[in-house]
Amino acid sequence: MFTILAEGANPFTQITDSFGITWPLFIAQVINFIIVLFVLKKFAFGPIQAMLEQRKNRISEGEEKLKRIETQLAESEERTAAAIEEANSTAKRLIDEAKDSAASLSEQKTQEAIASAQGILAKAEDAAKAERTQMVAELKQDFGRLVAATTASVTGKVLNDDDNKRINEEAVSSIEG
Image (cartoon, rainbow, N blue to C red; front, side):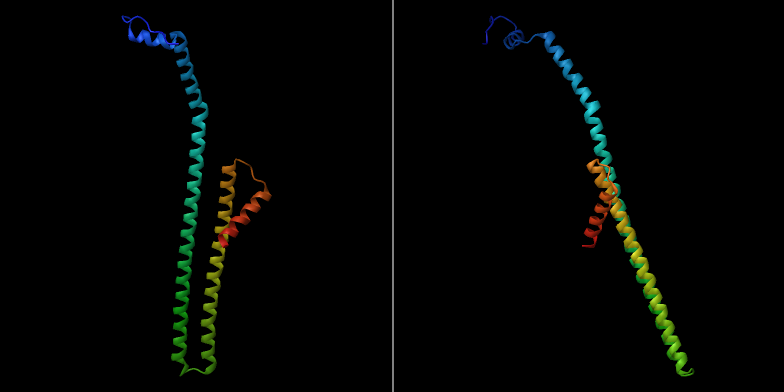
C-alpha cells in the first residue's frame, strides 16, 4: 500500500506521493470547502444567530416589564398603606376632637363625628382595595399577554383566540396558585 521512494527524494514529495495527493483536486476541494463554509455562515448560521438574539432580547424585555410591574405593585401597596395610615390618623384625630368636644356637645354630635370617621375609613379602605384589585388585574392581563407572546415566539406558531385564552388562564392560575 505504501511505497517507499528513493532515499534521496524530497520528504514532502514522498509524503504527497504516499498519500496520493493530487494538487489540482486538493486545491479544488479546499476552495469548495471555503465556499460551503461561507454559504453556511451567511445563509444558515447568521440568520439563526440573529433570530436567537432577537428571542433572547424579547425574553429579557418581558422579564424587565414583569419586574417593573412588580415594582409598581409594591409601590401601589405602599401608597395604599400610607393612605390607610393617613385615614387612620385622620379618623383618630376626628375621634379625639369628638371626645374633646363631647363635654360641650350633645350625644348626637358625638355620634355624628364617630360615624364620619368610620365613613372616611371605609372610603379609604374601599379606595385602597379598588386600586389593588385594578393593579392585580392589570398585572394578570400583562402577564397573560407576555406568556402568550413568548409562547408564540418560542413555538413560532400564530396562536388563535382559544390558545390565547387557555394560555392566559393557565398563566393567571399559576400566579394565583
